[in-house]
Amino acid sequence: MNYRTLGKTGLKISEVGFGAWGIGKTAWIGADDQESLKALDRSIELGLNFIDTAIGYGDGHSERLVGEIARKHAGKIYVASKIPPKNGQWPARAGVTAEEAFTAEHVIASTEQSLRNLGLETIDIQQFHVWSDEWVGKGDWLEGVQKLKEQGKIRFFGVSINDHQPNNAIKLIESGLVDTVQVIYNIFEQSPEDMLLPACIKHDIGVIVRVALDEGGLTGKITAETEFDKSDFRNHYFKNDRKREVYDRVQQIAADLNISVDDMAEKALRYVLSHPAVSTVIPGMRSITNVERNMKVGDGLGLSQDQLAKLKAHRWIRNFYQ
Image (cartoon, rainbow, N blue to C red; front, side):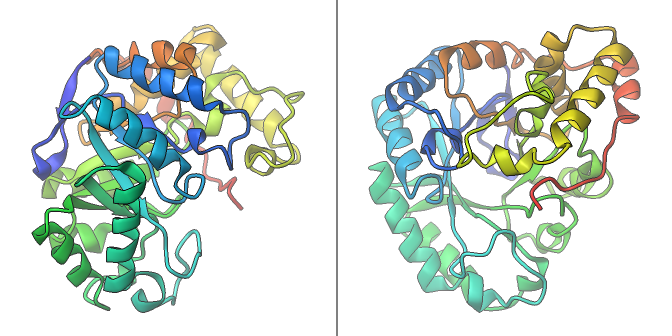
């Protein structure tokens, strides 16, 4: 496993981290707690040292599983979590005030709840689960963050940037108030390359990449015939003719790279890790099979310049969360 520095935090984290949304057992259907714990254990055996979770992942269920593993491997794992917006709105909408989403009181109370769920004394990176640059210099949320740092309850502060709004954190980055950002970035969603990632390099901000596999679309496993449980969020994400659209585009990518569709997940993760701004990528891994497949990518090797050039043509501007 290769390790990268998480911006100005100085933390050395594994190129491949563990995205723990899927093990929360709400939005993603089919997770089994014992299998999830085995997957977490196996990832750590293979060198992973960074896990990203949130209160919102199963109302704390994901945090409780992550905490069990973090305590078992005490001192070896960095844990990141997230504070849900007080108003319950994902993503943060334009015109919503800081006071509606994150007050100091809410930031502190949510963090203390996460610490109880995790069974830990400190969260390495505490993030806001949504963000709007309208909140820079507004409200008292920063007072809550600073108090938590002073008390040793969190080490660093980050934000999870709204879906497909990578530029809606540039002002925060330039303010110097944030340590890390988490963003959607993949072969289809290349827009972070335009402004966000260069800003992160300039200001030494750690970059955590989510949805590198496009919620499964870039694994090559989703076809027009794939069916999801009605309560699985992917049933909405890939609604109508979206599965066929994704399938056709993945076939074209594989043809352009002259690879098997079975190799798509690896190439998709390597695409993300080929950018120098990226600190880690956090695919969801609910089984040992997924762990062993994805962890092989954390070897420090990116894609060739020829492959990267070909993939630039596959930028696809759309928002399947809507």
